[in-house]
Length: 415
Image (cartoon, rainbow, N blue to C red; front, side, top):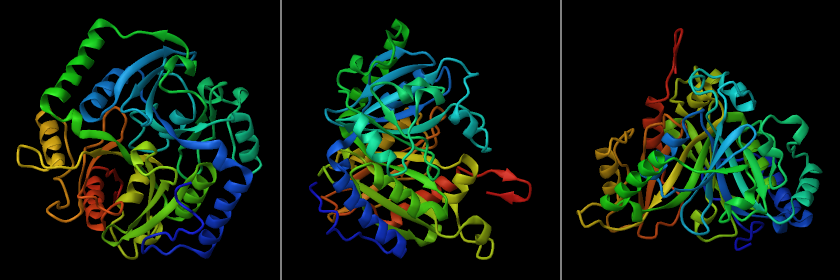
C-alpha cells in the first residue's frame, strides 16, 4: 500500500474510544496477515437500485449531472441491469431495476419502515463492488472473521450470489453492502448479468440529447468523477460502522472532525492504494454527536440523525469532483457548472459554499434529492491543490441546507 496504515496518525478533533483505536490497528494487522490486502483491490463499481420504470429517467439524470454514460443493458431473472461508465479506471455504475413492482426483498422491506422512503419502496443505494482476484478464498477468510455473505438459496435477487460476484449481507450499521468481483467492467458481457437487451431508438435519442447538452454547455469536460460518497448513520454506530468497513476493504481511517454547529461528526476513510480518490472514492460516515433521545435536553441541531429517522441508515450523497480552474466566464468552474445545471432545471439546496481565491480551499454545493435515486449529488472543486478532504465550515453549511429538505411532521415532533 502507498500509505503505511500502521504508521499513519488519523487527522481530526473527533475523540475516538480506546476500543476504536485498539481494534483499528488490529484490523489493519489482520488484513495483512490474512491476505485480504492481497485479495481485495480498488473500487470497481457503484451499485444502486431504482423503482420499476425509473431507469431511463435515472440515466438521463446521470447524463446531465455526472460523467457517467450508458454502455450496455441486460435482462435477468428478476431485474434489468444497466451499466454506465465514466473515465478509464474510474468505478463503473451498475443500475438495477426490478421487473415487477411486486418484487419483495430486503430493500422494499427496509424502505417501508421509514416515512420518507415508503413512496419509493425499491429505491436504494446498494453498495460498492471491489476488485478481487479470488472470490472463494476471500469468502473463506472473511467468513472466519464473522463477515456474512449471501448464498443463492437465501436471496431473492440472484445477482447477489451469482458466480461472478460475492456480496456481503447488508450492514446492520449502514444498510450498505460490500461486493467483490474479478470481472473486467470494461467488458460488460463478461459480467453475465443476463440476456443482452438494447435501448429503443427513442431512448437512445433522449440520452444523446442529454449528452449533447453536456458538450455544448461546456460542463461535460469539467465533471471528472466520483470524489467520495457519504452514508448517514446513528450516533452509537459510528465506530462500529468504520471498523466493519475497514475489515472488508483496503481502506484506512483518514480522520474525523466534529461539526459542532450541526451536532455531528464527519468520518473519512480513504483507499491507501491510490493517490487520486477518483480511482477508488473515499467512503464517509456521518453521525450525530448526541442521539435524538438525549438531544431533547440540549435542543441542538441534528439534521444527520433526522435523516436516518426519516429515511433509514443509507447513503446520503455522492460527490462529483469538478476540474479546478477559472472558467472563461469569469467564474470558478464549479460555479459555472451549477449555473448551467440550474438553467437546465436542476434544483439545488443552497448557494455554492466556500471561497477559492489565491489560497487552497474548497467550493461545494448540494443538489436537491433525486426523485429517482433519493441521493443528493454534491459538486466539489478542490482549489489550488487543497491539502485535506473538507472544511468544517463548508460541511456545516451543506448539512444545514440538506436538513431543511429532509424533515417530516409527525404528531408534535417536527424533524
